[in-house]
Image (cartoon, rainbow, N blue to C red; front, side, top):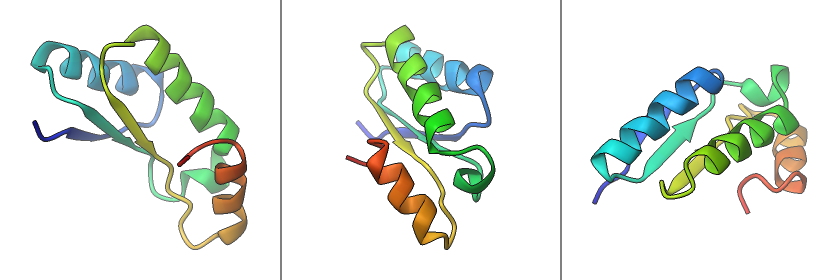
Length: 84
């Protein structure tokens, strides 16, 4: 089954996406807003995704943090465990 993709800006949107996944049986891919690594940070995004995964443990979840063209933010995200 193909995953459903959603752009999320916070917990309410992540919860809505995961609820849709739980109801439909589809895996979920969540994307941060464009360039979110620069203004929200890898730690915030990781905590958001971990909270969602804890609330919906049966919904397969893939999370993608947009780092734009900022290599340092991408490295920070990888070091935080995002993308591993």
